[in-house]
Image (cartoon, rainbow, N blue to C red; front, side, top):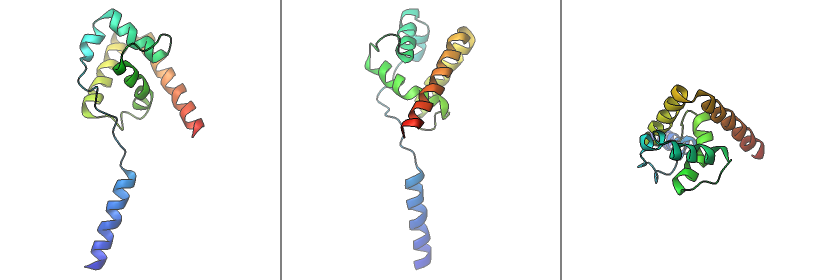
Length: 119
């Protein structure tokens, strides 16, 4: 019995160590379709992410900060709603602005290379 308890404790510790903390869900309520269907808003978010203009809202900055990692890790740390948001963005851009989507992917790769170099 003691051996079984020991194994359960080891598995629990390993699970805690391996578990990734999810991104904050504070902005999970945003209406991504409203943003994608509004040229001005969509351009503001895109330019924020590309760092060509300042981020005008806290949610834009939040998504800018997590997007590169989320894209490159297939949303490993995303909440379910964030996965839906990233999927909606990817679908919209690949269908409507594939050149911009390629820029997003290129920037996400560049950002992750920088992040990994800093660690």
